[in-house]
Length: 244
Picture (cartoon, rainbow, N blue to C red):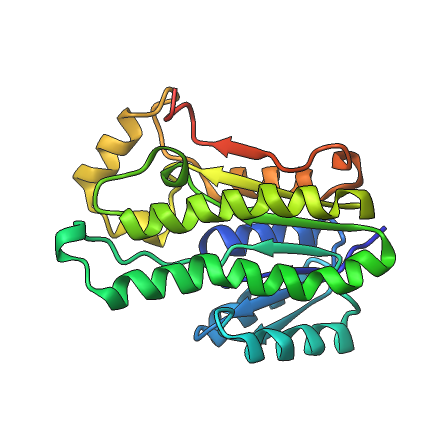
């Protein structure tokens, strides 16, 4: 059965790969973006050209009114959201002693508050239909911490705690809630680190390389499927053995 899917931050990186993977599997996809409308439309066109169904929907997912309007738009065009992929996220790295309050607040708002707002909005229809999948993109930083990322690690640790709590609340209603926690993945974000940092990151994994967005997308696809109905409240780490 084709399940209407909303991917937040779906215009690039992991979100783009998730949207394309699920779109290729027959899921009608809503690709959320904040400012990159052109990139989101490229993702939509790639899904449609492969025979899938997709739409782009702009919204700042850290704002309650924008989230409400986004869900209304998606439901009107595709139907109620049955699979929610909370992928939207940003980094504003820096040592804590130099970290401004704006850098803290914005990361927590985009990375964590958005998960609260979007999950709450999605649950209404999921509970009515007694079926739903919420998959949030976390990070190994949220499990083990990372110097210079106190705000980012806190936001991702929050996503894990939130997801475990919500899984206990809604499991009896046929809704599962899980987290996929990537390690170093080859995206625009990691390219900004520079060649030396990327090489060091590759060497720190057991498999000796960075992961790909597609490898994260495959984990999301599994958790979104009917076959994953007995998996909830879990953190699936996709890190090439980084945390071993």
